[in-house]
Image (cartoon, rainbow, N blue to C red; front, side, top):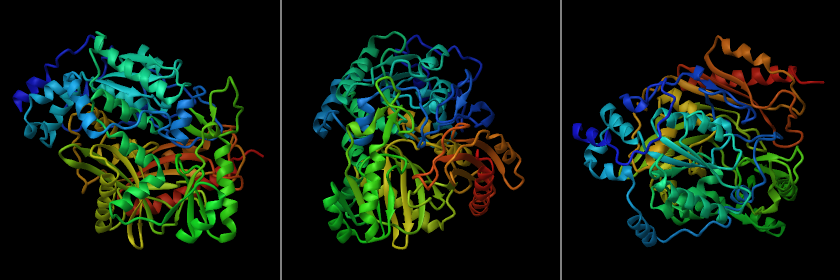
Length: 588
């Protein structure tokens, strides 16, 4: 171990850049847990509407946003990736060509160090191994394609604390440019995201290659993203650059809900009845094949947009028309889908989604049982090194909007074990061997079933709840894997730091709330330790209720309770209290 640390302390070609923010110690100099989470260090934002202050982190707000105009631009790339991925991106390479590319590319500085350390030392678990891997990461240059909303600022703050030289590729004028002047990132590379996917891929590829001649960083060690729409292009960039990451073919499979079902069926895994509906003419055959009740969902998309439950034969055509109408009215804005409640034109900050929309939907059987989220870390040569399963409260039907969740799960241990096995089998069936994943599933009356796979760290409250419950930073695990360092987070799955609950309160009706000051009352809630209570819409903003369509999320609350059972009980109580209180504050 001592020799390995000497290797890690002598990174070749380190580059000249270092962060001027020297007030905080580098986490790479610590052992054991990388860094304690202090929520006072973070600024909470409304889906990126405000600008973070220098020296503060921002919690991710990677959720469906309603009618807000964010910094961005008309983007064929984002529209392609959201609604018809992979768009015009290059086709995936064969395995032989991928290996050939990796051999041709010059080894990265991190790769050179890793080759000098025996695997048994590199894979050491516990504080000593963690300290070694953090030191190996220190000084690495990681390219982040797409910064996401300002709510993802915590990712780049974390990288800076680790001593990582971050390079962000994003649109000119992106909020992330300010991270350069603050000393959080080493370089910002502007690329016009209004172009098509293939053009952007070529520009990004050249930009990463050119980093080898940049004395600030002396070449990239890895590339990754925390943004769903950028996963396909990052997979192709990593493949073309000979870097680590999930394969494009696996990413493409899970971005298409129908292809995901087909992959599971081919692998002989328990699945759900499904039918691909390309037009209204397919509806009758879909019902005959799947039966009722069923769920209708777009082939691509996110945040349950356009997902609806169908309970009767009379509703099939009506729901199909509703889904098509929802899709036609969406806009793609800063990489996220929004309802078209603001003007979109030649000077708007968003692009009509229907410019390149794939209107195909998957018609699949409705699953009973407990819905869960399964966050997984897969490390090459080690398999699953972390799995956190959290229960989801009943979704608001027929739109399947999330309401609340609990980490860890309150399900019986044997059910949790089965869900983990299902998720790992599904990842294998779709072609994944490494990465950080957000898997959604259900434990049904017939056992565990997959809903979908997201080939990146989960958004919304995912990062923070794992930090609170298990002191596991999923963003750090993604960074480690991107440069080829094993991801082996220290955690005790049997002894979490209490149970963490998150609430996303849905709007009970349409309207507006002019002042959310009343939320502060729950910061002193006597029944649990409330960490966060914040609005998810701006004061005075149009709120969509279930009478108009998929409801807006009004409020986010995160609290810690002694155990999952108690957290579940309290989540139900608090959700209803907040819902009632919000209704009292609607504008007339």
